[in-house]
Structure formats: structure tokens, C-alpha cells
Amino acid sequence: MKINSNFLNLKDSYLFATVGRKTTAYKAAHPEKKVIRLSIGDVTRPLAPVVIEAMHKAVDDMSRKETFKGYGPDQYCYGYEALIDSIKGSYARKGISLESGEVFVSDGAKSDLGNILDLFAPENTVLVPDPVYPVYVDTNVMAGRKILYADANLANGFLPMPDFSVDADIVYLCSPNNPTGAAYTKEQLKEWVKYAREKDAVLLYDAAYEYFITDPALARSIYQIEGAKECAIEFCSYSKTAGFTGVRCGYTIVPMALVREGTSLNKLWARRQSTKFNGVSYITQMGAAAVFTEEGEKQISENLGYYRENAKIIATCLDELGIFYTGGKNSPYIWLKCPNGMDSWQFFDYLLENANVVGTPGSGFGKNGEGFFRLTAFGTKEDTLEACSRLKTLLKK
Ligand code: PLP
Image 1 (cartoon, rainbow, N blue to C red):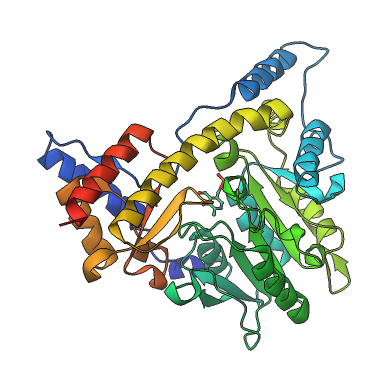
Image 2 (image 1 turned 120 degrees about the vertical axis):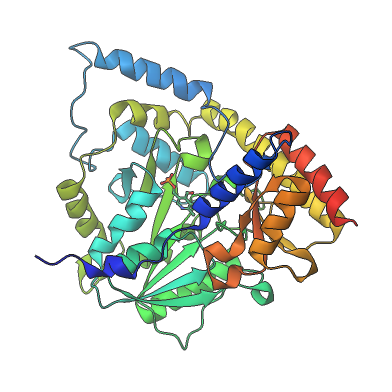
């Protein structure tokens, strides 16, 4: 018996563990100090009332013989039509028309981002932005694929554009980006669609943070770009949009028009899902179906507005300090250049010790993250204000 030795090529993910260990040690040594975590990547606001109400009703359905549900419907890989219709409605409001069979309900974007690789041959070359959400790299390392990196840096505003001299088969894009908060305009994405079509590549477009976008020049979906249905799969999530990180629900769009080597990727994905996945719970799906209703969108926008306000507080503070950053405007993440030439971990220690504020060192997200730092808008408004006041006192000196 042989193990998949590709796992041995994975780098230890020590980033969040080290942040946690250093924070705990500091708190233990200074119990009198209030440490503020602007490193939170998880949501903190509760679910919208319409979601709770829909989930309660779904629980009641489960209690009665007449309305009880077992496995979900086979027709759309166990996605209920009410949910699929609401997702199609959300896309229609962005000017995109989808067929029900193009929408796959998932237990979150992370699983599908990993599982989608079942569809691709191991010899494909993958292009991943650096820095980025580590899941893209690790899932391809597990599969033993060759990985190329697209540098995201100060020169390109952390939005790498295609290099037509590089041949990639699978290209990851994440917009708005985790960790940089940078988001592509529709004009920029046209270039990526052109690249994918020219190279016969497939774009894996992670839109987990699209509901943070307010600027109409920015793309909310890759399918806002003409020709994207022939070259892109899109991954979406209720996690950050509607506070579902603990509930677990997302959706992936695999267009009918996406065909490679004469084979429909939609059919392959449907086959893969019906073989290895048995759907998302009815209760969860009914809660998710309430999100993109008129009332649901009104209620989630209150929570999104709360996080946006925090992001604005941080961005304004950095503006006042004259510190370069990306994100903060159409994203819950703020990615800043460490001041005074500090590297990411030096700035982490400096902030923790002198302002008692915790962020995430950028070097943990890729080599181009060195010298940068991620703050998030997922804390409370009070903590965010307090942290920014401490930052100003410390860094104005
Ligand atoms: N994609 C990005 C860029 C993320 O940052 C995250 C979570 O932090 C995910 C996907 C995973 O989302 P989900 O909770 O839907 O699995």
C-alpha cells in the first residue's frame, strides 16, 4: 500500500497557529491589557431574521409525515428548486441568465474549490495568484499538479493581469481577493477571459466576497464578461454574504457552454457530485433560499453595511497615516504596506506589543505578501474604532 506522497509536499500551515500562539502568550503575560483582534476572518454578526424564520419552518416540516424530507431532489444534484430559483434571481439582477441545471448547491465554496479538481487531468498546469487564499495551492499540491504563480504586487495594484507568453490550463482568480481586498474591474476581467479562450484554459473564479462590491465598474460575477460561460466556473458562498460560515451553504456555477475535449464539464460535475456528494440539508437550503428574497437582501445588507463601515474606519485611519493599502472599499479585507520597512512578522510583533492589536502577516499568504499585513472588518465597530485610535497614536510618532 502506498500513500499519496503529494501530501508530503504540503507546507505546514503555521500562519494562523502562530498568530494564535503569539496572541495567547502576550495576553497571558499582560492580563491587564485589552488585546483587539483585527485578524478575524470569520463573520461575527448573527443570521438575518428571515433566514432564522425559514429554518424554523423547515424544522417544523421535518416533524410532520406530510412535509418530512429525506434526500434532496436528484434533478439538480439535491438542490431544492426554491433555492436554485433564488440564486438564478440574484444572477438575473446582475444581468446574467442561468439555467437551473447550471447551479449546483454546495456546503460552501471551500469544498467545491477542492473537489472541482476531480474534473481535470493531473498533468494540467495551474496558475495561481500570489498572495492568495491558500486552498488553491494546497489542493493542487495534493493532486501533484505543476503550479505557476501570477505575482500580485505594488506594481499591479495586487491585481495580476494575464501574461500571454505563459501557458496555463487552469487559472484561479479571486475577486474581491482574500487577503488583498483588491477587486477586478470588468475591463480587466475581459483580458482574463480572452486569455482563457485563447489558451483553451478554464478559469476558476472565486466570488466568495462579491456581495461586498458596491462600485459598478467592478465585476460581481465572471459571467458579466462576454464569452465567460465558455471558459469559467464560478464559486460562491453564503458564508460572508449572509453569515453562513457555521451553517454551511454555497453554490457553484458550471455553465452548459463549458466544453473541453468535446465533453461538457457541466455533465462531468453533475456525475461527480451525484457520485460523491449527497446534498446540503433541507433546513440549511431553506434558510439559504430566504437570503436572496427582497426582505432577505434588505436584512443581509444591514450586516454587510456594518462590516463595510468597519472597513471604512480602517481605510480612513490608513489614509490619515499615509499608509498604502488595497481593499477596504469593496471588500472586508484591508491589505497594507508595513510602515518603516518592517517585514510582516516584525510589524505583527510591533503592533501586538505597542498597540495590543492583532492582524495577519501578509507573508503567510505567499512570497509577494512579505512586507504586507491584513486587517479585517469582521470585528465590532467599538473594537475597530479603538484599534484605529491606537494605530494612529503609535504610527504618527
Ligand atoms: N474563498 C475564499 C477566498 C475565502 O476566503 C473563503 C473563506 O474564508 C472561502 C472561499 C470558503 O468559503 P466557505 O465558507 O463557503 O467554504
